[in-house]
Length: 426
Ligand code: URA
Image 1 (cartoon, rainbow, N blue to C red):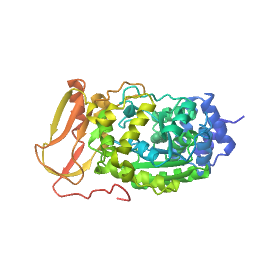
Image 2 (cartoon, rainbow, N blue to C red):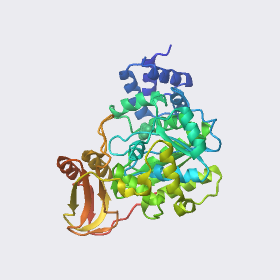
Image 3 (tube, protein in one colour):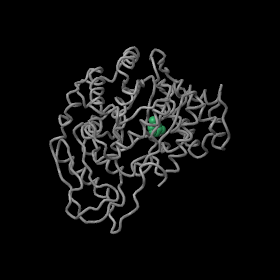
Image 4 (tube, protein in one colour):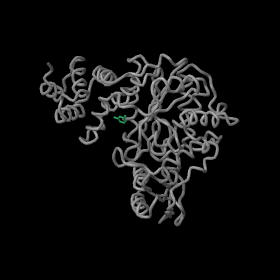
């Protein structure tokens, strides 16, 4: 019988826990036998003292085993999964699903709903009316074999220990611990069952990791844990110092992803999607060409096939302008001039939330048409009176709240400031 008070005390003192102790702890999380106050104390001790790599691997494995591990042995071919640690206007999954499927890979992806300042892939894909995210195991495997890509909700039984711990971390200021983030993300990826895992690790003002160094440390840890657990694993590190595209909010963001599938080669969303696809091709030993796979409407047709296969109406895949923004609209003009020196990307995401396009808490409804276009790009010159944003909401009160959230989102400077690179150390 594990004495959890003694276990917490040892972690508080910076001592290493055994595999059996970590497994007992995760069992206690899953069957609700450890009270929240003890778990909260344990999480805080981990925040301060950290975990060894062995402990992180044990915690990750035990959390992955806390529910059912997906068995993808029925999928013929190379199974792949990608994950972003969360960014604003980050719709790379929507670009990658059809492209990776066209390259012959089998994408089996379980995604979540958006919370806080970042949108969720499920919320975005449900912009196609009728799209079902609750496929059972047989349907997922059949669709992966037939279409090459499937996107579902992470069911209750995918790493349930993470759901419990994440909810506690959220209310005990223990989210920003690299070992805990690693175990949380990787337990879900391991339980998801894909053979190749690719993580997009974000840093910057719109990410929960603020510095490149932290993102690099997390990337190294996740790569190590994934490989030790027997999966081909790699990470890309990319900047979230500004939104990936001007569009924030479900309909507006899906339009941006569709632009790329229709052949646009501009902007950061294109660059990150292409970099992720190329890394995935390399991990799978393929010599596919991102632009070549998209050319000639192939990616659009594949996206429509995915949407149709999951019961959705694909009309907007062909005509993205069908994805309408919400009816109340307000333009925001620059009150001064200068070079765009910094963007508070979290504030831009929060603005979308206040407009009705995001969730403050789990289960809140979401207005898929709500959101904003935020036009300044770092390094660019903004003239006084120039339109810097367009806000969309279902009612004018929300426009007021969104406008207030955006007030300090943009910092202008008299001299051009250095623009952080999208990839690599700033
Ligand atoms: N996303 C997750 O799934 N878990 C974390 O801990 C942080 C981000």
